[in-house]
Image (tube, rainbow over all chains, first blue to last red; front, side, top):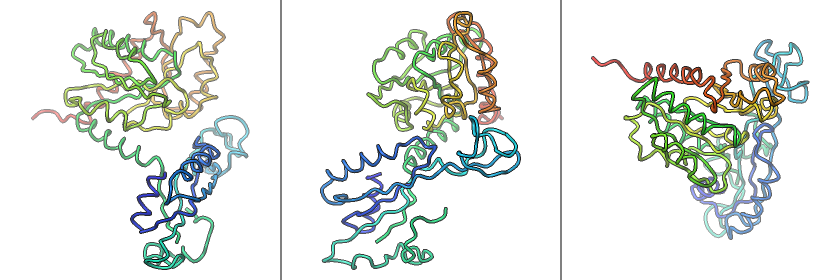
Length: 141
Length: 228
């Protein structure tokens, strides 16, 4: 994760990463607390780019669709194992969400003495349907 | 400044796996990712498989990649049966990833092979989440482990093309409900074949090898155009 961020920050000319938004699906198996712990340890020891950076983890709940009746439901609505459909009882639905493990976005800064001011829209994010302005927590995917 | 990244953290593995899958497809090699608990009998099953193929399909060119945290014990067992083996020692990692398999196979002449078996690290959890570029995932479970394994480790059984149920010679001595096991695997994965075997006595090994032969033939048909 840090390698991917390092690469992107270098490409964007950023010298400081402030916040990283990571999406972890409920079914994925990656443990948010372990990721949080590892990030804190690595960020603290990184001297520079990630110093003081914060990891925000969005835990995305499992959503599935029944292969028989098309009913969409969450893990909490399935009674029994193998996620049986609450409407028709068919198990092993198609997984719509819950398997994710990806960096959604991150926020960073350039050195103030050179280049643009922090907070100014970058060429990369401008024109993305107001992404930079609307401050939405996460985009619908 | 906010940068939208959408970077999948397992993308690096999936890209390597896709590259390996492409290489294997070009060479017409069937690749099997053999997974299961430590002690379920993966290596013993491979030993019996090698013996059976020696009699049934002389000239089958097979290489085994062995994944273990430590030691070369399993690779030595395979080589004693006359089949080349490459040992990966993960030194703590509980599963194989595509990069490890890539490293283990880069010196192999894939064009001279029919079957590549990757025996994963003994573990019913993590190996299920890592694509190794294989054609088929096969789970080896054993009756001594208990019949509730599909319920407790569903991810392992969900994507398997076959589930080899080993140590059937122990059925009289353990409380294992074969029907319940079959029903549970079918519930998770209706396409999966359950193949009961005893790698120790050899019972059922012929059926398992027959299943593998079908997959080998199918792979040859799809990747090797007839000469002329």
